[in-house]
Image 1: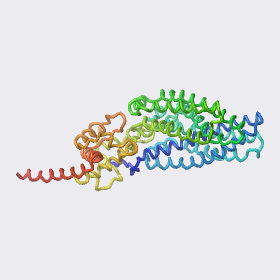
Image 2: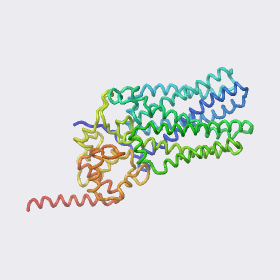
Image 3: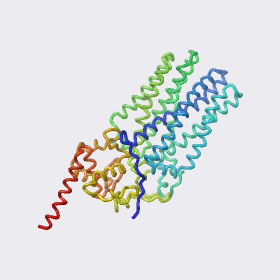
Image 4: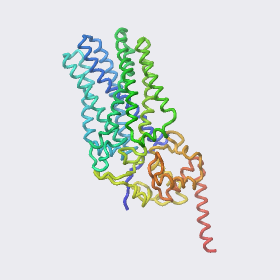
Length: 469
């Protein structure tokens, strides 16, 4: 019998593995975007400093660069591997899909990242120690290398939403997968908003400057950069939305919370107001205000946007062929990939999961709850928390229903046939659906499992007696 080889699922019971990944990734987005925006900002600022003979601007580059070393390159270098680790254990086949499709692209990105890391040290520590021409070249190399890392990563992120060309599903190939209608729209949106983040975080450094004239000059430049970038980002966001596949747009309409649009507009308006105020009156810029604004962007801007981006590509995690629960849902001949849905339809999960204990391969009244929990962790926990906290608690989706038969009917009628908007097709066998239904019912009433086992055992005991009579 074919085994589908699903890896053991990492399940974090408190908030769910999805939120662990999301929290790390959202923080990393701030670090990485600020580093790219600041690198380009430094190149412009160094040019102005040398052309207009303003050495004080180089001092700001030095101060912001030293801050960036910790903020983006130390903390970013922690959260970066954190994303790799958490996604590898939480979504191993999703990461595998990206590596197999873009391994050389990623290798290229790492080369430019090394140049970027070296560049931040050089641009900070060589201020006043090398001639202007050399220092300016370093600034440009640093800025362009940093931008290149974003160009590469955005193409990979776009593939996670939708492969660039339909030919990818037949032939594979990174060019078919990398460049799509969503790639450049997403790049433009991120390019704009990274300058907004750079301006806000730069305010933390500018606020601490002793020379008020220099503080006012830098604050106003940051404010102008922020205003232009935020307005451009809002426009690019609309372009980005227009490039989404029809299915993603449908999910946005039906699955995102009602406050999403209001929340995004509010943080954009708040960010613009912050920049306008600091433009008009630089004295109001203090470290605490800039720090609060940075946190606000993460909590009210980046977090909702990243959650939405993750949500609208469901039920897939990568390339429209790997479900969020790691099951491969379609053939990709050019990559040697075959759908696992036919195997699951014929044999079910319990008979084909390589890492399932043998004691759970057959459902009995006594182990139904345990088997159901294993199925829930495997098939559901990447998107749903099995506790009352965390990402999309499963308990909330059944309205407190404890009727095992009714839940079983839903599982066989909707999930097993793929007749849902948002969730993957989960072709459960009847006994698997029953076991999962027992577990789901127990989330609202912990006595369900014991009662179910007792009732089923009683029925089994009566049946032989009825046959004899």
